[in-house]
Image 1 (cartoon, rainbow, N blue to C red):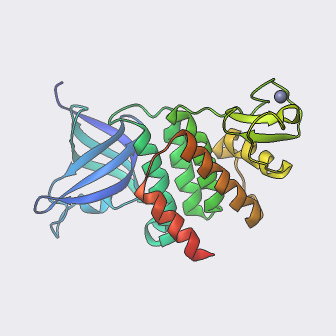
Image 2 (image 1 turned 120 degrees about the horizontal axis):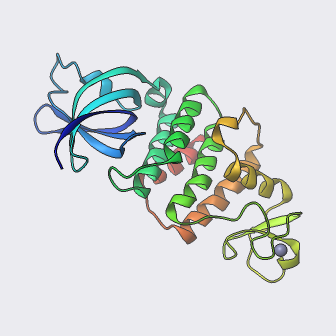
Length: 251
Ligand SMILES: [Zn+2]
């Protein structure tokens, strides 16, 4: 494919030194999915490009690309930074993990569809101080679809019942009504916890306001989501391990 200059809108989420003074910056873009930009001379003192590729910068980037392998950053405009995601260690570990989770699910240059907006709004809300655990759980639940797991959260996964009480069953692939409580392995969540999982799994992230959830409820849902991932997706992300460690220390 011929190389051409393309302007993309996106978020830089990872960077590493490359050769003597260059940087490789990974970007989640609306237009061309996730790819790596070569930023020539970014580590030289007078580099004009360096500031635009600090982690969690977002804006418009003009790249020379063949939509394969590395693209080269030429110039940028309207670049801002989610400064709290950069400077706050806890928020940084949430943001790194969520970006990693997305990165892991897509191949380079593959269109992200609605998931671009999901991650952008999630990062924006994290940066603005919305409860990071709630944002994280929402993104994890909604990202399951990209990994081929589409939990049934609207109605009983077995018989279609729309009225609760419900519980969650990994083997049934979603919520189940009480008719099956004795027939199948389930998580033994209470009504509030199931309702929370349904809300977080189904709500459009833009519509999520400031919600107060008890820390006990958050912990139970955290465990439930970890189990769903462990049993159905089975990925092993370093950024997740780091975040778990952060959570443990914050208690
Ligand atoms: Zn049922």
